[in-house]
Length: 176
Picture 1: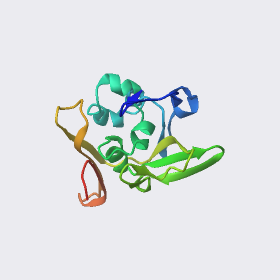
Picture 2 (picture 1 turned 135 degrees about the horizontal axis):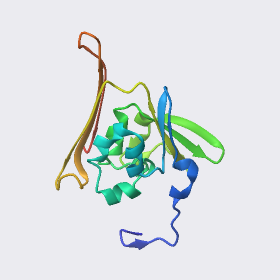
Picture 3 (picture 1 turned 90 degrees about the horizontal axis):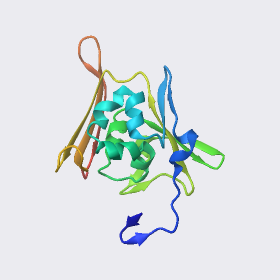
Picture 4 (picture 1 turned 30 degrees about the vertical axis):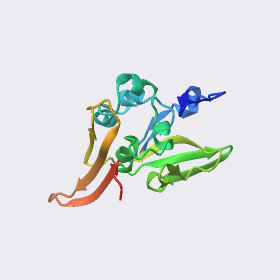
């Protein structure tokens, strides 16, 4: 891999670890392994497909993962606004130590996360029931297969009279 002109002497690829490629659904949650390819996620969880349709090319979706997208802590990453608007929680592990962390507490500053040294994202969990309305929007210079200029995730629930009872809104690519 070439990043800023550097060559790495070794590359560790976690995508072959079966425990990181899981997908589980229950009445309480949807849990997505951190190394599950995004193209596979779209097959398993149709809720994600509208978001995935805006996420890079098919080639990128075949290799990209939620764990990688979140761990880079890119302010223009598409995963964070999508998952923040769904109130996602991360399952983290270091050795035999496990912890859960709401995604809203994961990003601590520009390109910095709450991951401890040696800690990995094992899975992303989205609570159920899903919001009644969920949308993801993206603006990019070259259309759909590009890095976001701005991205937004919106989720809301309404009561029987149409009043909003719960709303979650998340943006990427903006400075506050």
